[in-house]
Length: 297
Image 1: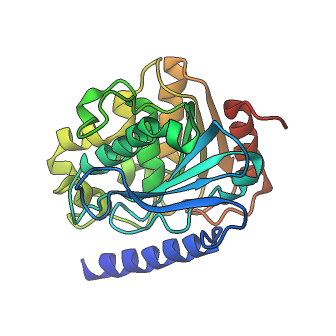
Image 2 (image 1 turned 90 degrees about the horizontal axis):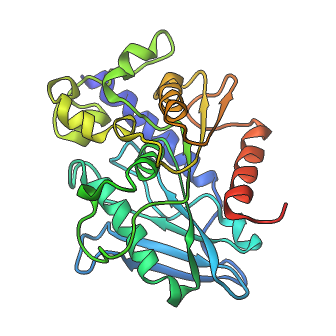
């Protein structure tokens, strides 16, 4: 147990190091920044978002960044995607309640609350509520995948602004888990984690060992909700990921394809859990955003 916890502590340090490599959010010249906006009235301290508005006149398409960190760490403070401000895209970066603060479905409820809040205030901030793309990696990839496949699942919509939709226009899912109960079986020789352990990130997310709570796990798995109505997906995953097996994205791809959902998939050869040096990754993301935001190349 101790060796597993030590491994995961080291992994979290690597996640934080990856976050630090992302664009800094402080002092963005010529842009309007709104920090620590509460998207739930009187809510938890984690139920806040930062909003970055580009120069010029809107309405601006909106990119929503959801951070990773195994659902028990991470922050909105250093989002990816800030470079898109120069192309007329607004960016929202949100925090959500972590697993030691509230178990699932609190995390997806928070993400949906944030989307509804953004739509409710679209006119004030000159946002285009018809062009909202969610982007996340690892645990954030899991949550944005859920956003993409639960647009019509009202049970996750709780709180304010319920007259607004929590659906998204499209999803960029980087190496997010999709079926917790298959994670250990998929890991093979690459995996170094026991996802079935009682202190695994997945078990802590649902509030108990995942093998003992299959119904809770099913409710947290994006693959559970796939239908033909889902948003288009871009899925990116390294084929040597030691934390979330590449197969997790493959089974989501297969389910989306079977449902007829527009999906693009890119495998990073030799890719681990992030730290991608493959130029194709940024090119694929750019092409996807341009296409689904309707921007000029």
